[in-house]
Image 1 (cartoon, rainbow, N blue to C red):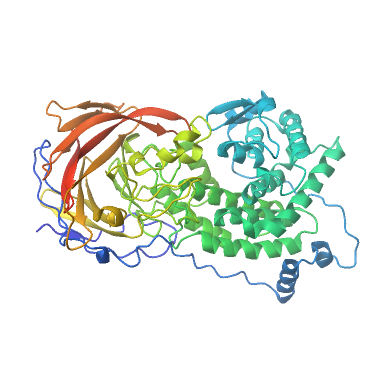
Image 2: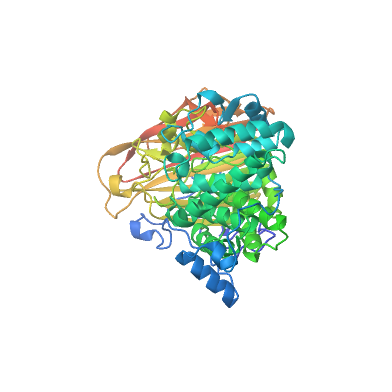
Length: 630
């Protein structure tokens, strides 16, 4: 029997992110064949499989990061408590003085830059959002508008200020920014009315006003500054009262960051800062798991959390204060899991609704964080596994989807994988549900979140977890069992990951078990999808299934003459072969159209390999092979 040993922790992050999770027992790898056209089964489950065999700790909730509340002097603690009770900040900061008009104490220099192309387009009179250009005069930004989510975030969150600041000097951009700011105020003057006053959007708007106040003020026009400072003060007061009612913990975190920044940068803000720092720490503890992954399991949300802390740290630096230690510790915790999803081209994989974020955007964010680290290879609580062998990168989703209260464009992607070779993505997921509403139509958003939009097995055309409207998820996968180890065999070796989920157990009485083995030289990925009955006694009859392998952009695919495989050619001339193995059931292999959402939110036409067949309700095993030939 071929031994499978725990994998050496050779890719542990440089920063301290907690000890690794002990490897569970792994299944043996069957001896293969030197003929790439023949595929032996990778492994067989040692038991028939029952729902009880899944671990109790494999549920969908992530562990909460252990963060202690900040220590404060007795007077500071009393100030924080009084502010939370509603005592006005100016009475706590200067109880014997009349309230002064709000003013800004410092100018912030954030290391995060915006999209220069979007800034140029804005100066030319267009919003450029998620691959769409829309004339400023034709976009309704009032409270009754029905903007799509990408436009809501970009316009009402005022992220366009960062884009403007990145494309030209402040003198060249000031009129554009000030005119659009005045227009927005005239249409959204009533706090709490309309989509603009969502807590998260309000928080981003407040933070961007503080970061890029120089674009909205002018020494030659004091009225501009007075208008901005009054609006900053009013919005901060609204956030004080509503920050805890955010839609999820990331939205609440954004609210606390905006309040801390306001307390730092606005006159008389010390009570608000003390109050918000405690709130921020509590929100972070409920947002982030023990390995640094956010509860939504979304790379986009992970990036948002990092960016918020980077901007907040810049606010501390602007006023000459040391940021709390927890900011640095949290950044060191958040960055390594994000790098787990980095492909050979430097960009991120397409997981939980995220498009394929490009290398430039990711590198800028990681560089701005100041965290120097390597990817986590096994971010088990967050649920993503990474194996890198030479220039080949394998990413594997071995965890349940996020809980409904945490989901953002939640996807039924359990046991899906992505594979890249060098700078080219070979196997991908469609991704991009979060970008729907720009170049990607809203009508296909739910389809992009479906199991069939991911490179995994689909049973009877059903999602492994129910995909609901507005980015939410329903019933389905509750538990995932996973193990990982190093394969040692004469003449070759590799890393083996295997996992099972119960998403189809209630409806069809079957568990899906997947085994992936990436060879040490990165030229061979052997896999097997196994369906086993969830109870000791399987049901009768047969049921249809499909195993989908969505191909990356620019991958040219051709079916083999025997219709048992396909040749895949990447732009650099590398040739890979996909082969089906011998199975107990009759299988068919064919190519179908697919699509992939790029980093700009634009859909690109691709293809997918689809293996279809009927399997007995008592289960079946379906091995396959991806091998680089040249």
